[in-house]
Structures are given as structure tokens and as C-alpha cells.
Length: 347
Image 1: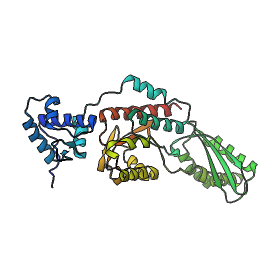
Image 2: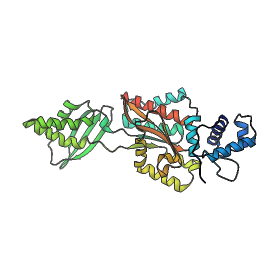
Image 3: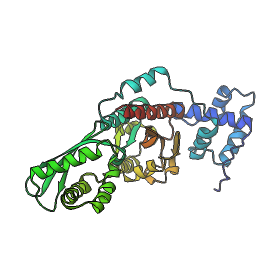
Image 4: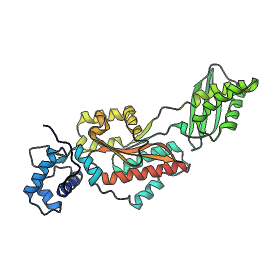
């Protein structure tokens, strides 16, 4: 059956009925009929008139009838119109804001903050919390130390300005003595501490072109070690609360759940989806097939970028059923992004 495109310029009665129907469906999970709408929509019209309007809304693809009964449920198009022009979002209550700030304390390091943020998003919405991990190239490093291991292996210990500590194993072209590694570490700490790691490799290469003799040897050793230890790691993400989706009525199909959990395990597609929202200010919402990912066709993703020092570091969000309380989830996601960015900046 062909569908007309959804018309955002619905008349006030149709908009009120659609708003009420989606609100009731989100609350109950049951198809909503004309008798229920007659009692709750606040319109002085007959049930027959309501049925005609519902039929029109179904014709334009905003509603569907899952069973032979007269009850209807929203489609992805219906949710989209609801979110874009019918939803009333209120600020997050002060108690929830205080919880976000209190459970995202400074001084614990960025990685710990990301884990706490994803857990909080899941706990506060009862869905899946997801946070993309910032690329380390955006952070300044505080100091670096090298520890010689057996053969041609060196352990690099990086301490970043946000208190994150990373240990990286690197393989060198030859064995380095402890004294050589100490000189390289001293050089890097003296000249580059406080600068983003993404700048360091290019600066070292420029310095090498103009260096002479002993300095040239030191720089070449520095480059050999820095090329590996300062290589940006693959972007990753932190997930929390995946098992909460197992109790969601709309996701009860085992095959659908398995596909969804496999997508969580792979991470790659979800990361690419989050990447699409990095430069978009404010909250973005993907409903069902809008994600472009088959495993996510039955869910919605609500995201917001988090920033520190005027730079976008990553994206966080919530993955849940399309039948979610958007008026609750949207302010939680926005407030969590603000709180996470503030906590990272204060590190």
C-alpha cells in the first residue's frame, strides 16, 4: 500500500490527537483507540470524527494498525513528527542535575568519567548508555617515561593532562639502553609537556630537518619512539546497560535482540553513527531506520556532543526502543553531555 509523505502542517485537532495517542502509547505500550482518545485528548468531537482523523493520519504514514482492532500505534514517521514539533521538553529537575554533577567528579581521569557517564545514562533512562572515547591526540600529555624490556621492546608510560595514564608496548628497530631512553624522555618532557600529542610528531620531524650531529641522533631516536607511542589509538566507545533491553516489550524477538547485541559487540557501525553527530550542536535523535543500520531499525538513538575548552571531544547518548519517553531522555542526554564536558575540563 502506497503512503503519502507525512504532512507536518496538520490541523490543530489532528496534531492534538497525534500528540495524545503517542503519549498514551509510550505510557502503556498498547494500541490506542478512538474511545480512549475521546476521553483523554481534550477535544469536543465524537468518536466517529476521531476515527476519521486517525484514518487520515494512517494514510499519511504517521500511524499504523498492528492488529484487526481499531487501536493504532505510531510509526517511525509519527515519532519523528512528534519529536520535531509536538513534544514539550522541560529542563531536568535540579535533583537529577545534582546527581550528574556528583557522580562525575573531577580528579578521577577521563576514562573513569566516560565509564561513569555511560552508567549514569543507563541508570537514569533504563536503557543503554553510550559514550564515544575522545581521541588521545586532542589531549596534552604531562610527562612520558620509557622502561626497557627484553630485546627490542620498550614500555612507554604516558601521563596526560586529564590524569589519564596509559601504558603502551612498542617494538623498536634495535635495543635501547636505559640511558638512551632516559635522554629521549627528558627531551620530550622538556620540550613538549603541555602540548597536544597530535602536534608533537610533526614538530619533531621539522626539528630533525634543521638539526645537526648529536641533536640529530637524539631527535631520530625521539621520532622512532614517538611515532609508535604517540600514534592515535582507534576511537572506541563505552557502553552500559545493554541487558536492560532484554526486558523491553518491543524488542522481545530473540533474532532482533541477537542482531542488536552483535552490533554492540562490533561497535564499528555505532561509532560511525555517533561520528555523524559530532559537529551537530545540541541533541540529535535517530528513530528506527533513520540510523541506516539494520540492527537498530527497532530502536532510537538520542545523542549530544560533549565539549571541553571549546573543543568537541566526543558524543554520548542513549539507545532504547522507539517507544521511549523522549521528553525525559532528551534533557538527561543534554545535561549529561554538559556535566561530562565540565568534569573533563576541570581535570
